[in-house]
Image (cartoon, rainbow, N blue to C red; front, side, top):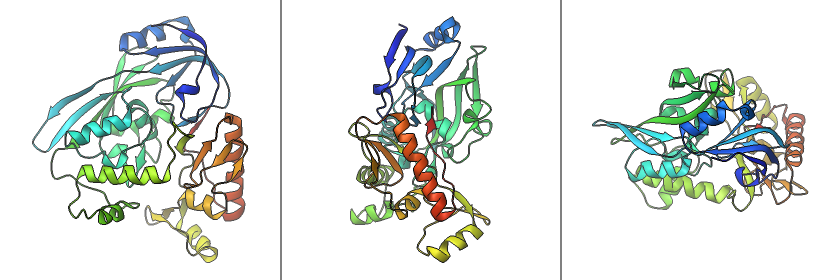
Amino acid sequence: MKILSNISLKPYNTFGIDVKARHFAEVTSLDELREVLKNSYASELFILGGGSNMLLTKDVQKTVVYINLKGIEILEERENDVLVKAMAGENWHEFVLYCIDHSFGGLENLSLIPGKVGTAPIQNIGAYGVELKDSFESCTTLDVQTLQLRTFTREECRFGYRDSVFKNEAKGRYIITSVNFRLSKKNHRLNTSYGSIDQFLEEKGIKTPTIASVSEAVISIRQSKLPDPKELGNSGSFFKNPVVSKEKLEKLHKEFPEAPFYVIDEQQVKIPAGWLIDRAGLKGYREGDAGVHTKQALVLVNYGNATGQDILKLAEKIQQKIWDMFGIEISPEVNII
């Protein structure tokens, strides 16, 4: 393992932002990870996974530790379900496809989400009516202070909407090294009602969907709406969908009766942030190389040479416009660094 200096992080973040890391280390084993943590240059760390849920706005004056631990293992297999362990450096989408190929159900709605397995619990990634926590059983972490392994159960992770203990009390203290998922082997509970999945299946003439056909639908829908980070720098959904009171929804519907929403409970609803941005006339809006995607207003993109500050400035402008127009505050889903 080599410790490199003054390394560009452009290949390591899906926005394609060209900032530099003071030090950079790629780790492929727990021993290498512990070695990095033991050394003096690791007094300040920046843990990097898939680089898919962050916006880098400046050079990183820390030791960047790129987690590239690999491996998938079946820990336990029963008649109806299976416990699968995936190391933190596994590509998320490839892991989902592995599960589908083995007829393991539960993650199919999370197909084509960029990033790696190890960062997925931090964000409690979700899409099309499913969240990671629905199939999550536990994760193994390395304590950066004691260098000891610790297991977090689902309850201990305190999952919320795009949130977890790793974004709050445990932030910076633990590095996720592997994640265990409890997945179904038969009688899969398919979720096809969210988004356009049912419509896709109907158009394809699929009357009895499988986890593979649901995954195919999700991939097709995402590809039709979301740009490929390899072709156009982006971090997927940039903003969280805001949660508002039903009273606020009633006021919104007086002026915008077409405003969509999803019921959370008796008091709260979720408004699609993409609809708010689109309705504000910002879909396709562009300032230099920083822009709002032409097909999905929830996605901010780097058309080539935008800096992190350029993207952040655009995001703040969007937030202000949504507040002025709707009186609703939208917050970034990505981590601003």
